Image (cartoon, rainbow, N blue to C red; front, side, top):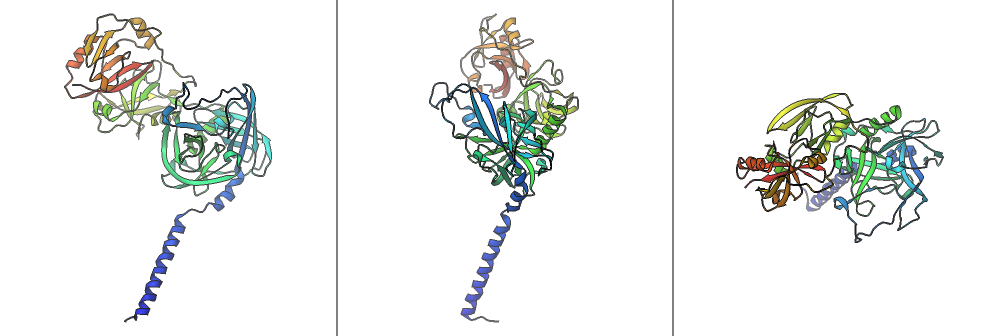
Length: 476
């Protein structure tokens, strides 16, 4: 069959129109529709207002003496009174706003700890504009979860999902009261899961790009099935407003906390009694590891569950067969294990993989264990010894006791050059381990150093300002 030129043109037009329609159809199918989700779930989202007396001081401008911005960005809790200014009277009634959602028809409500922390009165406003004074059933600072109760019945509730099934890239929706604008809905995607933040050790956050602002705290994060998969908690911002990075507490963690608060009035978490740090590439090399992963043990608490089981320099890479991606992920993993249960830890020790078993203890109170810091300068018992770019002297028993050291340790009096300088060791540090071997005198450090092959990277454990930390040193 042959076509005339005009017929060919019309055929091409039809084909082009079909491609455009198909493209539009595919695009339309790929974009989520949130209308029904908001209609169905919006009535169970509440607005929370608290009043309390507090003392404040004027904020320092960024160029004022003493101002310091931690982590280069501010982790902003976002429930406060928007548009605040400078100094205020010492004692005043402050209103703070947040969000929450109804867990059960008889009036249990979930929100954030920081929304209701220190509140004298908690007012809950429902979607139908009814208002109730809420009772605080329990609150957990470590997870930033709080459970409230209002005297009401037959309330609309939300369906609880499984945060363990969330995948990066999937669509999510938040409903809350940003800046007091009730029942506001915003959407976005999951940017990351299992995100560990410096200020929240026991929560592997869900990171999203959902627009979250002051007043969204405590509100639900939904998947496309209309299930709650998280509770909005924090933003990462210089200004306190949304900058594209938001964090939600996984609902699986929230429900565990809520169950404990409801049944026990408090939250118990697992604890193994060690201090840990990250493993970087240089430290991984010093431990014979191909990739930097796991949690490096820097201190073992004498009375803790790990005493006589874990050792300084152990790198914990698995807990009950689950990989420990980094130091930040270990506390959350341990925290979910009930005290009294036994777990198997896979560790790298002396460049070899080993498996140990220990019984999980209960995490102490918020105060935690503090490390003592010497109140006076360490005193030398012997003349200084120069080794590895350090001038070392022995320390006396009083300093050793103040540092919490059973035995050993030498004082770095002065940094004289490489390789200590490149490793980041400072004058005033106390060296306790070199290449996995404990040191008790400057001469011992010199002897160990003489046995290290030039060019090898070794781990050095130092105490600084009451805390222990491993550093990677390349021996020349």
